[in-house]
Every structure is written in structure tokens, then in C-alpha cells.
Image (cartoon, rainbow, N blue to C red; front, side, top):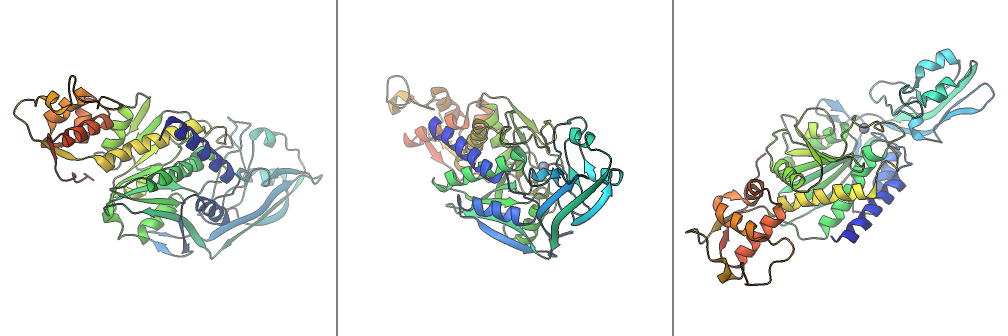
Length: 437
Ligand code: ZN
């Protein structure tokens, strides 16, 4: 993609997040369905509905939750908290209620963050039946004594859990899994940015030649990946690489959290891309908390799935509050997350082992138009030093990624050199290396 393509894609991703932002997503319900339907206008998603009560490993698909209206009125009949103004105002999965009560009785049902008095916090109660409201602490402090009327028009039904899946076949059946969560209401970075980047990634991959196949899952966090894993055991053996995409749009540096093994090819590819990007970045070791990488990386499943994000969850003050809004995510940051993901995918697609066919000292590169005055190949990613690295290391045991790691050069430079040498008859391609898991 050219820089102007990338800029346009950044704006398109932000526009998609903007459209999706108002919907009240949760782990089940119509907010998720509406979101998946909108995504399926961008990419041909298959929408799956898994019935309430389905046993998924140690879990059970919960009742479906839908919400129509929720508010608190003061003694004068004025709405002091209204779900219609912001869907974070309601404790997610609240049961229905219509009662009058004193402020003292209402207060235990009101959630605020006193340290961030202007923000609405995000709270849920998925597995314990409860109801409540979330509001800025300043608004709580302004509530007067008196009788309040609370109303929540929601229901919990024997419905289903909805998720979206898009499979893009490649030349081989080896798969890359891209997973993102679609279960948060109006939260931009923690939710929508990941989905928007995944959509742009899927479109790009669908438009280019592919050695690998790609499977995109748009699922509710935790229960969604558990449900997918429990119902798709036949797919695991084909998954050779994977990424959870989340918090993909803020201005923080890119953070990569390694897969459970820490030595999978996706771990090496992502780290090499970040190291040679010239940008700040962080790498985290695997830990069994965070997003769905912990389900994909549970011991009985053990898929090589890392997590790509910008600022990690819980480390930015906007996290799980109304400040994680559309201003907090930036088109150029989403574009940067996309570009780095595509760079890592280039490694997965193109990594290979080669054998130097003239290993007795260096071949005289000028004879092949690769050195000195010969040839016009010295454009773009072409590097004479990369030629020397590839020739020196290509004894059939070092793949191109290992050569990139050892030389400190970008994978693309090393790949470009290898392709030039192959074309000149100086290298022979061995089989594609088997990825470590
Ligand atoms: Zn979250």
C-alpha cells in the first residue's frame, strides 16, 4: 500500500468505528448482531448463533441479554441518569427493575470512579444477576436526598451467543487466526479499533496472493473464544499462527504480548518487525490474563497466538471509561497497527530456507548484475549487505527470518536479497520451514 492508501485506510477504519460506536454491545444480544451485520457489509462474515445453554468446556453459553431503556428519575421527574444518553450508564447485563427508592437505598447500585470524577465507568455483571447504573462521580455528588424512580427495561432469554467468522483460503491449508472481541458497548480503543483493523486487514489479504489461509473471528471476549474453541476442535491443527487484535487505535507505542510458548514464529516475526520499524515498542512475555490469547494458549489447546495492541488494557487512564471514545483512537495509529500486522504477515507468508549454490567463498556478484556497476536492481529495499548476509547464512539451516534477526535488517530487505539471488541462480529454495508452536 502507498502512503496515501494507508492514510485513506486509517480514515476508513475510524469511520467504521464511528458508525459502530453507539451500539450497546455485550457478550450476547442485538447490539452484537447489529455490529456483526455492519461488519458483514465490509467483509463476507458468516454469523453463527450458538444457543443459550450449550455446554462449552467448563462453561455454558449464557442467556441472551437485550436492553431497550433504562433511567433514573428524581423526585421532580427529571431523568438524572439515562441509558439513552450513553450506554455505559447501565451496568451491563442488568436485570429489569421498576421501583421507587430513597437515595440511600439507590447508592449501593451506583458505580463511579471518584479519582476520575467526570467519567462514566464501564461495569458489567454477566454471571451474577444484578442491576445498577454507572455515572460520573460529580453527578453522584449532586444527587439530592429524596425519592428516586428507577426503570430498566431489559430481558434475559433463551436466545444465543452471536459471533462472526470470515475464512479466506490460501494456497495451503495452514491457517492464521485473527481474533478480536466485539462485546464492549461504546468503548472505542478497547473493542472497536481492533475490529476495524481486522476488517481492513481481511480486505487487504483477500486482495493479494496468499500462501496461508486466514480465519477472522469477531467474538465476545472469554465466553466467545471458549465457545469457538469448544465447537471447532477440528480447526486447531491447521492454525499455525495467530494474533488477538485489541486496543489497536490509541497513540501509545505498539505492544506485542508473546504467545504461550514465547518462541512461535508469530513471536519472532512480530518482534523482528517492531525491532526494525524505527518506532518505539514494547514486548511483553505471555501471562494468563488479558484477552483471548489466554484461552487460545490454555494448556490443552496451546495455539501459537500472541496479542497485538498499542497501550495495554488497564495501563491508560481512559481504559473502561467514557473517555475511551472516538477522539481517543486516531486514524494514523490504527493505520500503523495495520501496517505492522501486514509486515508480520509478510514474514509468515514468505519466510523460507535457501541453500547457497556457490558456497566456496563469495560469488563474484558483479557477474550476476548484483554488485558494483551491474544491473539496475538497486532500488527500494535492495541492499548489497543483505546479499552478503543471505549468501553467508544460507546453508539450509537458517531461514530468512533468522538471517533478518542476526543481521538486524528488516525482513523485507533480506527477502528482497534472497529473491534477487534466487533469480540470479545463486540460491536454491528449500522447503518452507515448519513453524515452532
Ligand atoms: Zn475491556
